[in-house]
Structure formats: C-alpha cells, structure tokens
Amino acid sequence: MAAMRKPLVTAALLAASLSASAAPAHEHGAARLDVAVEPSRVVFMLELPLDSLLGFERAPRTDAERKAADVAIARLRDAGALFRVDPAAGCKLERVELRSGALSLGGAATSTDGHDDLDATFEFACTQAQKAGFAEIGLFAALPRLQRVDVQAVTRKGQMKATLKRPTTRLSLAR
Image (cartoon, rainbow, N blue to C red; front, side, top):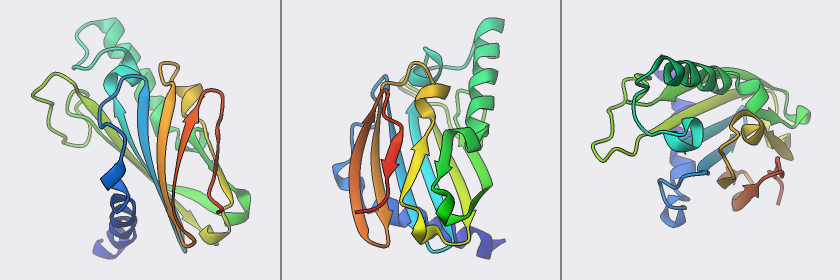
C-alpha cells in the first residue's frame, strides 16, 4: 500500500514547490489546479471553493441543495470528462479522491470561517507520461459557475504557470 502512495507523494511535493506564488486560496468563480507529470503518471490536484461548485459554501440544507451537491460530486468523479491527457502519453484513470468537510467527503474537517472548499486529486497511470504535450481541462463544462482556473504544473522540462479562462480548455504541458 505504501508503494502505491509514493508516486502521489512525489507529485504532491513537486506541485507544492510552486505554491509560494499561488493564487488566493479561496476566490469565488476561480479554482486552483496543480499538475504533476511524472514518468508513469499524471496527477491533477484541484482546490475549489464550494461556491464555485454549488453556489453556497456550507453543508447542503434542503433537498434541492443535496441534489445539486450529488450532481456536482458525480461530475467530479467523472475524471475522464474533466481531464483528457494527450493520447501520446497512454494514460488511464487510476484514482479519484474528493475531500470536503461540508460535503462529508474524505474525512475533511468543515471550515470554521464559513468558506468551505473541495479538494480533489485525480491520478492517471500512464505508459509514457513524459510524452503528454497537453491536457484538455473539462472543468468549465462540468462546473458552470467556474470562470477561471489558475494552473501550476511541474513536468520533467520544468515548472510553469498558466491561467485558463472560459472558453479556453487546452493546457499546454510542453515548454
């Protein structure tokens, strides 16, 4: 089990190395996406204010809010629609992990300031991840309230930053 987690830890550390100049952690209509490209995997780490996902930042209170949360969670679990890595990399979805205290996901704690987020990790196993020249990001189609995605990426060729705004969906992973 520890061996399975090691690549993710490496990816998280690589992406965390970019965080010194990261965008504000909680901005409505925006998301933060860290991308790590390793020899055998591509990992996407998403940080999203619940307002950008649902239009509210707390646990759902009504049946309509619970239904909206269920729909949004189902969209996030469909990682193949959210992230399409360049076919040259030979990637296949391996794992999706969602964490939000307000939505009772992943054992995360509920925010004490009333501004809850959702954090997600999407891990793709790849035969040749270093050949990934791009990734199509389907977050705008899945999350209508989302207007901007601030991206930080680490590839074997170095670090890069990008901002995706509607309607742009292609993230270049080549320098």
